[in-house]
Image: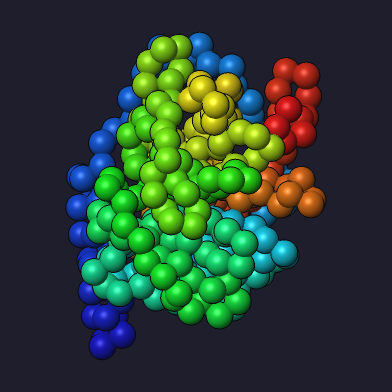
Length: 279
Protein backbone atom coordinates (compact mmCIF):
# COMPACT_ATOMS: atom_id res chain seq x y z
CA UNK A 1 0.00 0.00 0.00
CA UNK A 2 2.85 2.38 0.88
CA UNK A 3 4.44 1.83 -2.55
CA UNK A 4 1.10 2.48 -4.27
CA UNK A 5 0.63 5.73 -2.33
CA UNK A 6 4.18 6.88 -3.18
CA UNK A 7 3.66 6.10 -6.88
CA UNK A 8 0.33 7.94 -6.83
CA UNK A 9 1.93 10.96 -5.16
CA UNK A 10 4.70 11.05 -7.76
CA UNK A 11 2.19 10.80 -10.61
CA UNK A 12 0.05 13.61 -9.16
CA UNK A 13 3.13 15.78 -8.64
CA UNK A 14 4.21 15.25 -12.23
CA UNK A 15 0.72 15.93 -13.57
CA UNK A 16 0.51 19.21 -11.63
CA UNK A 17 3.98 20.19 -12.84
CA UNK A 18 3.09 19.44 -16.45
CA UNK A 19 -0.22 21.31 -16.18
CA UNK A 20 1.59 24.39 -14.89
CA UNK A 21 4.32 23.97 -17.50
CA UNK A 22 1.87 23.84 -20.39
CA UNK A 23 -0.19 26.66 -18.97
CA UNK A 24 2.87 28.90 -19.00
CA UNK A 25 4.04 28.24 -22.56
CA UNK A 26 2.15 29.60 -25.56
CA UNK A 27 0.79 27.65 -28.51
CA UNK A 28 2.74 27.54 -31.75
CA UNK A 29 2.19 30.38 -34.20
CA UNK A 30 2.33 28.17 -37.31
CA UNK A 31 -1.09 28.22 -38.95
CA UNK A 32 -2.64 25.30 -40.88
CA UNK A 33 -2.44 27.48 -43.99
CA UNK A 34 1.32 27.89 -43.54
CA UNK A 35 1.79 24.20 -42.88
CA UNK A 36 -0.02 23.28 -46.11
CA UNK A 37 2.47 25.37 -48.13
CA UNK A 38 5.65 24.07 -46.50
CA UNK A 39 8.42 22.26 -48.36
CA UNK A 40 8.30 19.13 -46.21
CA UNK A 41 10.49 16.08 -45.70
CA UNK A 42 9.19 12.93 -44.05
CA UNK A 43 11.23 10.09 -42.58
CA UNK A 44 12.15 6.42 -42.52
CA UNK A 45 12.94 4.74 -39.23
CA UNK A 46 16.34 3.05 -39.37
CA UNK A 47 16.55 1.91 -35.74
CA UNK A 48 14.69 2.36 -32.50
CA UNK A 49 16.26 2.21 -29.07
CA UNK A 50 14.90 2.09 -25.51
CA UNK A 51 14.41 5.48 -23.84
CA UNK A 52 13.59 6.19 -20.21
CA UNK A 53 9.81 6.88 -20.15
CA UNK A 54 10.35 9.00 -17.03
CA UNK A 55 12.74 11.38 -18.84
CA UNK A 56 11.08 14.72 -19.63
CA UNK A 57 13.55 15.33 -22.46
CA UNK A 58 14.71 18.92 -22.91
CA UNK A 59 18.14 18.52 -24.52
CA UNK A 60 19.86 15.73 -26.44
CA UNK A 61 23.43 15.40 -27.72
CA UNK A 62 25.39 12.48 -29.24
CA UNK A 63 29.15 12.36 -28.78
CA UNK A 64 31.78 9.62 -28.92
CA UNK A 65 29.34 6.74 -28.86
CA UNK A 66 27.02 7.92 -26.08
CA UNK A 67 24.03 10.19 -25.60
CA UNK A 68 23.89 13.12 -23.22
CA UNK A 69 20.41 14.14 -22.12
CA UNK A 70 19.02 17.06 -20.16
CA UNK A 71 15.64 16.55 -18.52
CA UNK A 72 13.11 18.93 -17.02
CA UNK A 73 10.33 19.36 -14.43
CA UNK A 74 11.04 20.85 -11.03
CA UNK A 75 12.35 18.24 -8.65
CA UNK A 76 13.01 15.84 -11.53
CA UNK A 77 15.48 17.79 -13.69
CA UNK A 78 18.82 16.15 -14.46
CA UNK A 79 21.86 15.82 -16.67
CA UNK A 80 22.48 12.27 -17.89
CA UNK A 81 24.92 10.11 -19.81
CA UNK A 82 22.97 7.36 -21.55
CA UNK A 83 23.97 4.19 -23.39
CA UNK A 84 22.40 4.46 -26.84
CA UNK A 85 21.73 0.79 -27.54
CA UNK A 86 20.12 -0.04 -24.20
CA UNK A 87 18.84 3.31 -22.92
CA UNK A 88 20.71 2.60 -19.67
CA UNK A 89 21.53 5.68 -17.58
CA UNK A 90 25.23 5.30 -16.83
CA UNK A 91 25.70 8.66 -15.08
CA UNK A 92 23.28 11.21 -13.69
CA UNK A 93 23.50 14.62 -12.03
CA UNK A 94 20.21 15.82 -10.48
CA UNK A 95 19.56 19.56 -10.49
CA UNK A 96 18.50 21.45 -7.41
CA UNK A 97 14.71 21.30 -7.02
CA UNK A 98 14.35 25.03 -7.71
CA UNK A 99 15.63 24.61 -11.27
CA UNK A 100 13.65 23.42 -14.29
CA UNK A 101 16.27 21.89 -16.59
CA UNK A 102 16.24 22.70 -20.29
CA UNK A 103 18.54 22.31 -23.31
CA UNK A 104 22.14 21.11 -23.32
CA UNK A 105 25.12 21.29 -25.65
CA UNK A 106 28.77 20.20 -25.60
CA UNK A 107 31.52 22.76 -26.03
CA UNK A 108 35.03 21.31 -26.08
CA UNK A 109 35.29 19.23 -22.89
CA UNK A 110 32.33 20.80 -21.13
CA UNK A 111 28.56 20.43 -21.06
CA UNK A 112 26.40 23.55 -20.97
CA UNK A 113 22.87 23.27 -19.58
CA UNK A 114 20.10 25.87 -19.53
CA UNK A 115 17.26 26.28 -17.05
CA UNK A 116 13.83 27.54 -17.98
CA UNK A 117 12.80 30.64 -16.00
CA UNK A 118 15.73 31.03 -13.62
CA UNK A 119 17.89 32.84 -16.21
CA UNK A 120 20.75 30.62 -15.08
CA UNK A 121 22.93 28.21 -17.03
CA UNK A 122 25.42 25.66 -15.73
CA UNK A 123 28.76 24.45 -17.05
CA UNK A 124 29.96 20.93 -16.23
CA UNK A 125 33.12 18.96 -16.81
CA UNK A 126 32.27 16.42 -19.51
CA UNK A 127 33.56 13.22 -17.90
CA UNK A 128 32.73 13.82 -14.26
CA UNK A 129 29.64 16.11 -14.48
CA UNK A 130 31.36 18.31 -11.91
CA UNK A 131 29.89 21.81 -12.04
CA UNK A 132 32.67 24.22 -12.99
CA UNK A 133 30.72 27.40 -13.71
CA UNK A 134 27.44 29.30 -13.95
CA UNK A 135 26.22 32.09 -16.20
CA UNK A 136 23.13 34.24 -16.66
CA UNK A 137 20.99 35.32 -19.59
CA UNK A 138 18.15 37.79 -19.92
CA UNK A 139 15.47 35.55 -21.41
CA UNK A 140 13.96 32.18 -20.68
CA UNK A 141 16.15 29.20 -21.54
CA UNK A 142 14.73 26.56 -23.90
CA UNK A 143 17.20 25.00 -26.35
CA UNK A 144 20.92 25.39 -27.01
CA UNK A 145 23.45 24.24 -29.61
CA UNK A 146 26.54 25.72 -31.26
CA UNK A 147 28.31 26.26 -34.55
CA UNK A 148 32.09 26.46 -34.77
CA UNK A 149 32.29 29.84 -33.03
CA UNK A 150 29.09 30.64 -31.15
CA UNK A 151 26.49 29.17 -28.84
CA UNK A 152 22.96 29.34 -30.29
CA UNK A 153 20.05 29.58 -27.86
CA UNK A 154 16.25 29.61 -28.09
CA UNK A 155 13.77 31.05 -25.59
CA UNK A 156 10.42 29.95 -27.00
CA UNK A 157 9.93 33.04 -29.15
CA UNK A 158 10.84 33.54 -32.82
CA UNK A 159 14.31 34.76 -31.79
CA UNK A 160 17.53 32.75 -31.72
CA UNK A 161 20.39 34.28 -29.75
CA UNK A 162 24.11 33.94 -30.36
CA UNK A 163 26.34 33.81 -27.27
CA UNK A 164 30.09 33.99 -26.84
CA UNK A 165 31.05 30.46 -25.62
CA UNK A 166 33.71 31.80 -23.25
CA UNK A 167 31.93 34.78 -21.65
CA UNK A 168 28.30 33.79 -22.42
CA UNK A 169 27.60 37.37 -23.45
CA UNK A 170 24.95 37.89 -26.13
CA UNK A 171 26.70 38.80 -29.39
CA UNK A 172 23.81 38.72 -31.87
CA UNK A 173 20.40 37.34 -32.76
CA UNK A 174 18.15 36.44 -35.67
CA UNK A 175 14.37 36.30 -36.09
CA UNK A 176 13.10 33.01 -37.52
CA UNK A 177 10.50 33.38 -40.26
CA UNK A 178 8.61 31.30 -42.77
CA UNK A 179 6.89 33.16 -45.63
CA UNK A 180 7.69 36.43 -43.85
CA UNK A 181 5.82 35.37 -40.73
CA UNK A 182 7.43 34.60 -37.36
CA UNK A 183 7.89 31.01 -36.24
CA UNK A 184 7.65 30.84 -32.45
CA UNK A 185 7.99 28.08 -29.84
CA UNK A 186 11.44 27.16 -31.10
CA UNK A 187 12.60 24.60 -28.59
CA UNK A 188 15.38 21.98 -28.64
CA UNK A 189 18.17 22.81 -31.12
CA UNK A 190 20.88 20.95 -33.04
CA UNK A 191 23.42 22.44 -35.46
CA UNK A 192 23.83 20.10 -38.43
CA UNK A 193 25.98 20.82 -41.49
CA UNK A 194 25.45 24.57 -41.49
CA UNK A 195 21.77 24.52 -40.51
CA UNK A 196 19.93 24.88 -37.22
CA UNK A 197 17.42 22.10 -36.64
CA UNK A 198 14.73 23.19 -34.16
CA UNK A 199 11.81 21.35 -32.60
CA UNK A 200 8.67 23.47 -32.79
CA UNK A 201 7.04 22.85 -29.44
CA UNK A 202 3.66 21.10 -29.40
CA UNK A 203 3.99 20.03 -33.03
CA UNK A 204 5.52 17.08 -34.87
CA UNK A 205 7.66 19.49 -36.89
CA UNK A 206 11.36 20.22 -37.00
CA UNK A 207 12.35 23.47 -38.72
CA UNK A 208 15.60 23.61 -40.70
CA UNK A 209 16.79 27.18 -40.29
CA UNK A 210 19.47 29.29 -41.95
CA UNK A 211 21.72 30.74 -39.22
CA UNK A 212 22.57 33.64 -41.53
CA UNK A 213 19.07 34.84 -42.36
CA UNK A 214 16.73 33.10 -39.92
CA UNK A 215 14.70 31.82 -42.87
CA UNK A 216 13.12 28.38 -42.55
CA UNK A 217 14.68 26.41 -45.40
CA UNK A 218 12.42 23.36 -45.09
CA UNK A 219 10.47 21.28 -42.60
CA UNK A 220 10.65 17.73 -41.30
CA UNK A 221 7.25 16.23 -40.47
CA UNK A 222 7.55 13.41 -37.90
CA UNK A 223 3.84 12.74 -37.58
CA UNK A 224 3.21 9.16 -36.48
CA UNK A 225 6.75 8.50 -35.31
CA UNK A 226 5.52 7.25 -31.96
CA UNK A 227 2.58 5.36 -33.41
CA UNK A 228 0.61 4.45 -30.31
CA UNK A 229 0.57 5.02 -26.61
CA UNK A 230 2.83 2.26 -25.35
CA UNK A 231 1.62 2.14 -21.76
CA UNK A 232 5.24 1.99 -20.64
CA UNK A 233 5.20 5.48 -19.18
CA UNK A 234 4.52 5.25 -15.43
CA UNK A 235 2.28 8.30 -15.79
CA UNK A 236 -0.02 6.83 -18.41
CA UNK A 237 0.88 8.92 -21.45
CA UNK A 238 3.80 10.09 -23.53
CA UNK A 239 4.37 13.74 -24.24
CA UNK A 240 5.43 15.83 -27.22
CA UNK A 241 8.29 15.42 -29.66
CA UNK A 242 11.46 17.04 -28.30
CA UNK A 243 15.07 16.00 -28.69
CA UNK A 244 17.43 16.08 -31.70
CA UNK A 245 20.93 14.60 -31.74
CA UNK A 246 23.37 14.12 -34.60
CA UNK A 247 26.22 11.66 -35.01
CA UNK A 248 28.58 13.60 -37.25
CA UNK A 249 30.95 10.71 -37.97
CA UNK A 250 28.19 8.24 -38.78
CA UNK A 251 25.81 10.79 -40.36
CA UNK A 252 23.01 9.55 -38.12
CA UNK A 253 20.04 11.60 -36.90
CA UNK A 254 18.34 10.71 -33.61
CA UNK A 255 15.03 12.06 -32.29
CA UNK A 256 12.83 11.42 -29.27
CA UNK A 257 10.21 13.11 -27.10
CA UNK A 258 9.32 13.96 -23.53
CA UNK A 259 8.41 10.78 -21.60
CA UNK A 260 8.78 8.69 -24.76
CA UNK A 261 9.72 5.01 -24.28
CA UNK A 262 11.73 5.02 -27.50
CA UNK A 263 14.45 7.00 -29.24
CA UNK A 264 14.59 6.76 -33.03
CA UNK A 265 17.33 6.90 -35.64
CA UNK A 266 15.76 8.23 -38.85
CA UNK A 267 16.58 9.03 -42.46
CA UNK A 268 14.95 12.00 -44.16
CA UNK A 269 12.78 11.29 -47.18
CA UNK A 270 11.84 13.81 -49.88
CA UNK A 271 10.31 13.66 -53.34
CA UNK A 272 13.67 12.55 -54.72
CA UNK A 273 14.09 9.75 -52.18
CA UNK A 274 16.25 9.49 -49.06
CA UNK A 275 18.52 12.42 -48.34
CA UNK A 276 21.79 12.88 -46.55
CA UNK A 277 21.55 15.29 -43.64
CA UNK A 278 22.03 18.88 -44.73
CA UNK A 279 21.02 18.26 -48.38
